[in-house]
Image 1: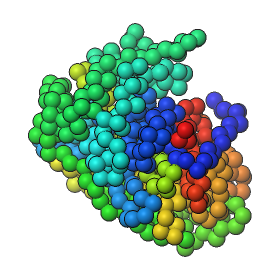
Image 2: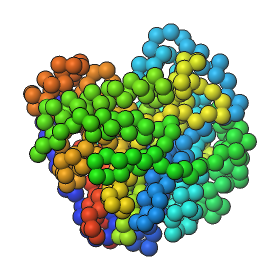
Image 3: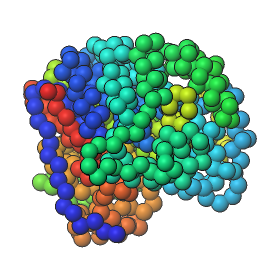
Image 4: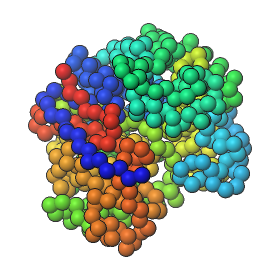
Length: 509
């Protein structure tokens, strides 16, 4: 079905701080921390915890991610809290069965899809340690203060609207397979529907208790304390290879960013097994080949496509494959000019589809990031962190933070971030115009083109690549779902994904 709506969303501008996120309630949680004297990192962390309550199919404390922080003055740094394979992982458990699996990326099928769904698809989560470490290193608020708004949301219950109903319905058949998941998200055996009047909420008592425990006991309780004992026991009972010592061994890491110039800005991305190196290759090609005019034209989109395809060819041959699609991105700028870009994920929608009954945690399916073919780059192995597509970035100009951005959408993230950087830098677009400008997705062999590009641009791409013309839509997302903030002087601007009914940029009150 073709959607015929024309949808717009304004940018938010203020001299105070702004949080841009994929759910307005989570963004408000972050803005609350800003109003209480927190900085961009405090707000990003509070938003991430809140997203685990209001949008748990995208991210949560059972996942992992990356945070890029640019202080108003000082070096940019990255907090890496990617998931990690357990030490007792047996790669032989992931035997290929022939054919193509249920992954949307056409990977070889694994027996029982155990790398994608269920207990054996779970990696050691890094989110709690990463968010806590970010607060300790760069924030002004305690973990209890940052969790506070999310805890209140969890105690009130997850709000049910039509977007929530849709998100749960998409995965209902798989959630039905696991008793705790069924009880958690399908309380009457079907996806919960919004009330015709008033408000309906889905109770989350176990998750609320977990948040309460973290607020009191600290981040390492998830890995070495009472929570860790509960989590490890339930994972072992379910058939996961994760044990208590895997949790105890896990550490988030602060790293130097991958930094490079693009025109007159400096781009700071996460290094290593992330989207950062591929983004750098794309923008290097754009810097050499793109000749900006007033607006991106047919030639510009052809350059974007060729640059993406060349960079992805190198990525897939040298770094391996990386799947994924349901992720959360948060961008924050505070009144002092500090900027944070945070991407957190469970990997697939509802991750492994497993909810831990005693803690209420929806667990990741990070095993799906590994290439299931033995001997390839990024192959499944114990104790290893996989290749991911996440690409949170901060742009600095004249040594000061200028913009923070990122997106969700698996492999679609990297082309989206590259084009948004080009729109902002090459065409000097304001943030709302950059978000409204149509994009291509060149993460696969077939290039997906927004029909708003116009015939000339589509034909320019089609001369070199197979093309599919598809509009942007609420579901499925054919491109990526970005969130961004931008600072000019003392004025801040925020923008969230236009086609989402719940995404918003919220200013500090």
